[in-house]
Image: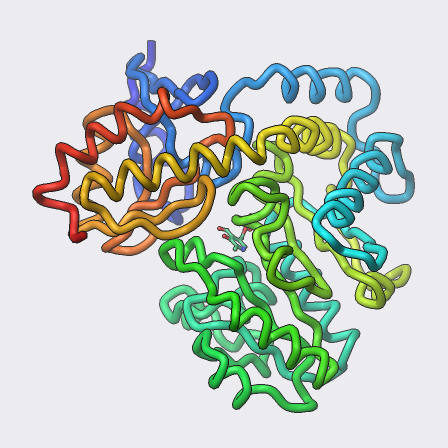
Length: 389
Ligand SMILES: Cc1ncc(COP(=O)(O)O)c(C=O)c1O
């Protein structure tokens, strides 16, 4: 059997160095566990970075994808398929259940950055030449349009000039009021900034953004790529606070199969016309089948996500840690996150460090309290060095 070390060596000799040397070479997954090429088992609390909503090898997902592949695979966007229409209607239903009264229209793509790319284009059509606003610490993706509304200097600056007319504002009511004017075409925001370190946005700031968008005729674009599809215990993390003009979804939408959606609400859903946007793979029947099966499973899990998420946060707080986030998207404040990540990995537990003082947890939504016990124990053991209260 080829060892993990050998897979990693061959990986490093073959791929561009975008991700560094991978920490594990994984060969198999089941439920909330994965196994590496040396046969070692891990508890996965990262879930492919908030993607694997149903965990690994969930039968609903594998059966749906296999059945679709045996029926009809890729067809292109010259044609539609029953599964594409079915998925579109399920997404529209999610918006209804989340309190959206206006009709929605959906553009399907393959990744979070592409969904945001479509959203950037919608703002251009909405108010040609207008300015875009985004928050400091925002992460919306790596393609040039999405990167233009992503704040972090080290990932933006090597690729400048980016599409212009973007201003980054602090996520405060005062900063928003100062930044808005008639020439603002739209504002991008994440209900919880996941990549920045699981930083929840103040609901008052979201509400102020909604009212300023109404006043100045701008689009409120809510990026639910990481927070949407049950991650925080509701379909959309933002929906109880505000209703957006555009919502982007990806990650958990396909339960591990690449698919994303840019959802336009009311008039924003009418901006694209034939020729204004497209994607060869967007709406691919396999992706739609994976997504439809995932959505069917996630609906009944929403209450479970809230309960397990609260229990998990409570256990970590009892162990002395400060915890941010909601449902099963949690940031745990630690003294030295890279050290904690590797200490946990040594104990067979996968998490990541979105910033040097935060551990991010985004496990499968199917995870139970019992699954989490080894992690809680490990965090108790690490508390003397890592907990900062
Ligand atoms: C909020 C948010 N938007 C967009 C993206 C980009 O998604 P993708 O990596 O699928 O392009 C991410 C990825 O982490 C994200 O967290």
